[in-house]
Image 1 (cartoon, rainbow, N blue to C red):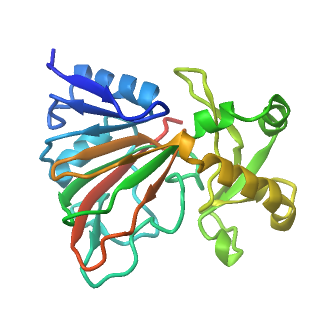
Image 2: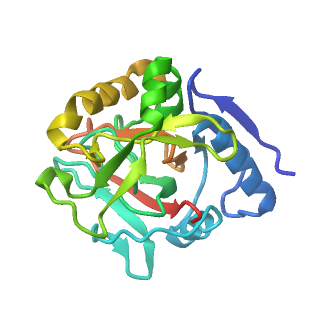
Length: 262
């Protein structure tokens, strides 16, 4: 038994785990991680030292590894792992356009993402998370009933008004956690374009209301980074937002994702 501690990050979601080694992803460790994810949705594991191959080994314990069909910065010898490099003179941050979940625009959907800090700025670059379960629970009974009957279109290219295979699909608006049976909203500002059988214009008022609701501070937490930190989160029931506030400094992360089991 690994001697570890778990500390909650906020009253809504998030936890920090100390005293485990992710280089040894045996059955015992995976039970610890999956139980913590079911309870807290996003976990930070401190003081880790993983290379891309170690990260790939870990993610395969969660499910089929995801190889991004569009983003070109995967390693040639380990394509399921992306290098997220922000040079000092860059102005954009990968994934930093808006709150979102990873891999919602295909089936099977994204299950977990894992992000490991290799080089960090002196200050800044936090990552924020929101619980879509807490957001759903705060809605009125009438709204919950309505949303349980709805599906929405998720499209990688929807902002260019393109819904093209294999980068779009229909998803239920409310998703149920198979372990905890809790319900969460399964929409996000970056990839959800409209409700099924409605136009984008017709869908916008309710979608924008829900997006704003999900991003309310009372459903969120924010993780600061230290070298060696690993964040693991459940994309099915969280949104995340990387904070782009460290201009002029280097930041290097490696990231990988696993798909939900079909």
